[in-house]
Length: 149
Image (cartoon, rainbow, N blue to C red; front, side, top):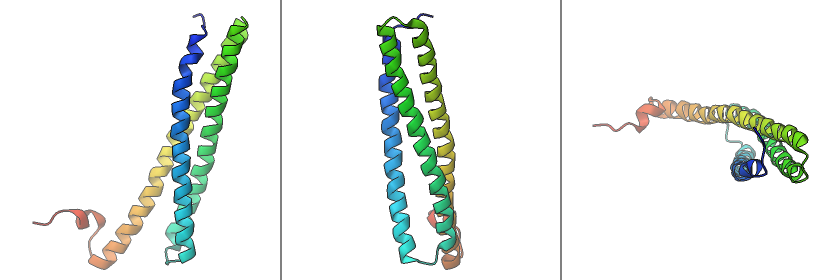
């Protein structure tokens, strides 16, 4: 397969959309951390949940950082590949393009793992609400929200 200038150019839109999604995840994470910090300062007796959330958020924050690093590196290598193609350094461009694709693959894999961890954070919140609700009403979260006839 011959690599043409338009091939890495096609990745531009995909990588920029991916970076936008990663940035949105980072901003959501920042809001979660700020909210958790506020809740921690109020110290409402939820130390167990807060500690679990803090550990989870720290791990997710590092993963999002790595996702963004590999996404930016993929974008950078894509630009270098286009420059090399423009200068007719075909072999080097092929290797750089392969590196760009590998960086994109790593970024997507980290994103997949981060999604798994983020669901664990939500499960911690749900578990805490279930505990509080079962103490107050004697029923779990599922029974609380089901319609009673």
